[in-house]
Length: 95
Image 1 (cartoon, rainbow, N blue to C red):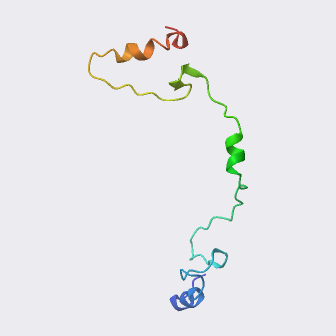
Image 2: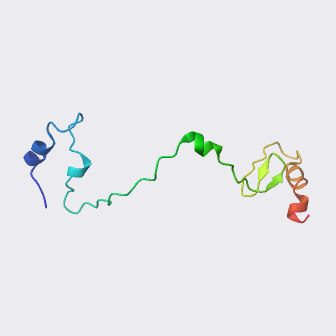
Image 3: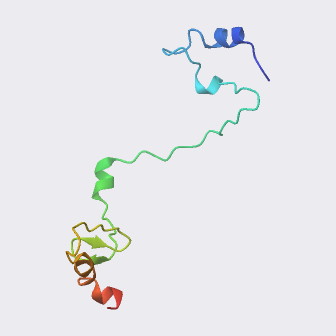
C-alpha cells in the first residue's frame, strides 16, 4: 500500500508538537518491516531495587579480581607483570 506525499502531509499536519503522527497511526511504506508492539517491563522503585542484596561472583584476588572479570596489568619491559598476576592466583590456577 503506498500513499501520496500530499496524503502523508495531510495526515501528519497539526498532529503533535513535532508534526509527526502518533505511532498508533503510523502507516509503514510498502515493503517496510515494522516490529510488533512489545510490552515494557514494570517500573521498579529505585529504593526497593537498591535495597536488594547483590550476588557477587567469587573473588580470585581479594578486593581486586572477581571470577569472570578482566584485569589489565600495564608496565614497562621486565617489570614482573606476569609474576605479579600469577602469584596471588597460584592456588586458583594450580601453580
